[in-house]
Length: 497
Image 1 (cartoon, one colour):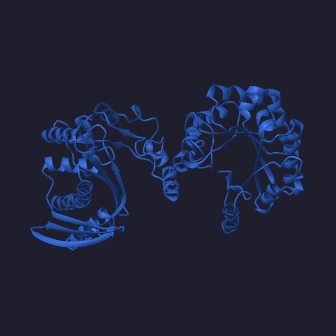
Image 2: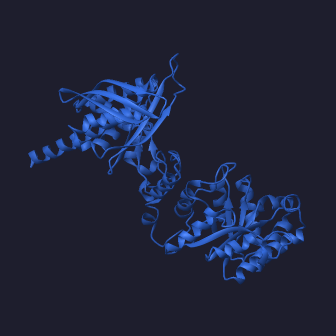
Image 3: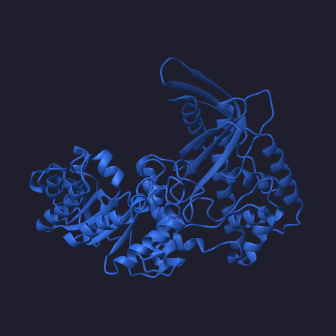
């Protein structure tokens, strides 16, 4: 990564504080850039607060935007085109005089070019001749289709063969990634974007899709000098870190890094991928730090169930096994009742284990009660059967589900200390629209983790607490059952030796 744009120091104290805090960190390759605009109309650069805030940020690079569309110059800035060109050139020159490298973002360039090509070209020429290192063509309102981006970018490249061109795309018509790729195909060599496409309105170009596509599909060398197996191996990890920092749920359908990016649901697909992965996968998932997933659902054939069993449980199993058919029949029945195992494969695996005769009941929730009041606090009592005896435990939490979880953990960890590292990571509630019933069916999906792995379970009921208990029970049960399977496998190995 060549540049990290940190924000607009003039716009708010938080962005300015970011640049101050970043002085404590040493970037090995990327240069930190401060964002801002050209000078205001009829104001000298040295008197412009926005330009001076960029200089005060004390970073090596300035990214400034200026107008390329006459509509904005005349109706928004309310100035002349000549003054606009002076604002661009003088701002770039001023920052260059202070030793800064300047990246110039030509705001609304594609719209400006479509209305008046010569005026738009004159605006970027003013920045280039004033010393901008890169001139970035921006589709600021995100409305330009890919074929137009290619045509216009190619024309700019023809008119200014020595100009270093960049691309800045928004996703308002769902084309930010495609437009970025088209701009590069037409001659741009600098791309702007964000991890996961986070940005205003519908977002910016998603770098987790742009970067691997440029290298793996279009043959461009991107980022560091390491080969692709090393270069992108932590891409999914970076994507998740950004989601977690923002408190945003990851998009499971996100290209390259999403949970379902390499998921196979149909039985024919799953069979084919087992034999020849590239039959249905455009790259090896490991290249981008992802993994192949076989989804167990009502539309998946027995082969998918077999694959899931082999992958997760290490059990050699023929897809014609009677247990496979019975497990699939149960999964189909449950999905008609509102279950969905796409995001909760652990619950499906428990079903398969029962039909294979590999399941041994370790505990069972016999009875539960929840008390809530006007405050957020809730209190729960849970009676649990554990290894032949009943145990009663209470729990207090923020809301009824948290209280139930606290009580359930207390009841289980006495007999199963291996559950102590297990933590509830995520909790989602959905009202399945496909369920035809007078009752309001609730589907709860819970994500668990223990530091080594992550798994998800599902519960369905007309009672949200009951649905949550089902998902919680499956989650703790899955941890115990899979641990027991591994223990048995080790014991059998020692017996054979």
